[in-house]
Image 1: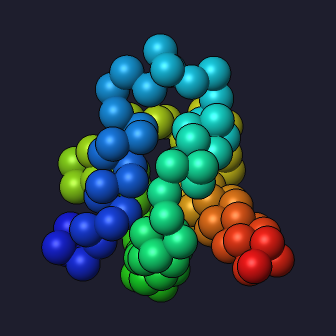
Image 2 (image 1 turned 135 degrees about the vertical axis):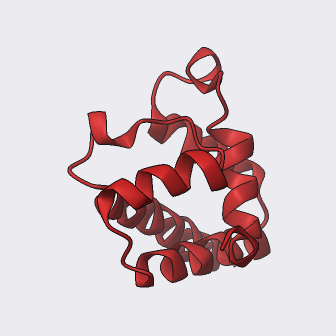
Image 3 (image 1 turned 180 degrees about the vertical axis):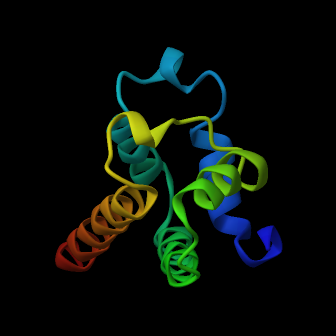
Amino acid sequence: MTNDFPEAKDFFGAYFHQDWPVEHDTADHVIDDFLRNSDKAVLILVRNELRALLSNKLNEIDLRAFFLKELHCYYCYWNEWASGEAWLRHIERKLNENLADYHARL
């Protein structure tokens, strides 16, 4: 299933690696860094893959395992969010806001 989410794997693996708390104070700072350093095409691909992942409707245990084992994400979202779905929707919202700002600047 990981092959279906190559951009999400790049995002989570590169930005939420094991040492992310050394580089950033919060998970939102990680996401903001990704938004600043990625071009529009990548943001759209990640957003679309997050939507596809959400449509799979994995249960919470399977979603946690998928984040760690398949996407190499070392952020324990369950310490701050009610569910993985809630956290993914938050990321999707931040991506959408960034893309809307991008279009407004044109």
